Image (cartoon, rainbow, N blue to C red):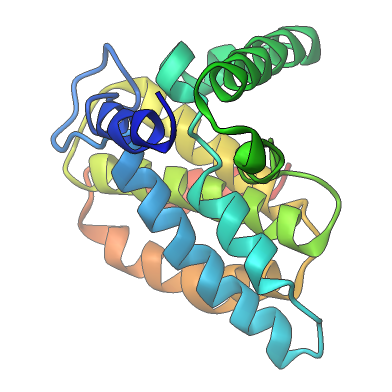
Length: 209
């Protein structure tokens, strides 16, 4: 019981594999994904600050480092499935939030309950920090899918993942998104010319939507 239960539960995130059921040249677990999202978000927030945007760094680190904790209870559901409809996405989010709340009520000492509710909540919202989390989360999907396509993985889900994540990113109005599209993505495309897939065409089709 207590904080020990939470600390011990973090090991479970190392055993939850992303994009389950598909062949991958490189496996990624949820805990590694969460660490990368923090790193992306940190740089994205730096770009925002360079443009005069005020960042609540405490909030940013809390929501990015804990944004997928609820997957301990429901696992990683494939992106095309969880976003198939707004109703389904809402239902999955409700189940995840309910199970996190139950975990907090059952295991976390009273004086820490409100802190854990704040830290383990769904952090994606219309605040600049919530939008940065959304971009960082989708950016990791871009890089995971890009790496598989570059190695010649013929699983079509990685093309879907790459396209979907790019579309989501480009529609978020942040300075860091424009920087990614103008400065970073061209470097990715250039690196991707060695891929058996036409990553440039896939990228251009996604950005045209």
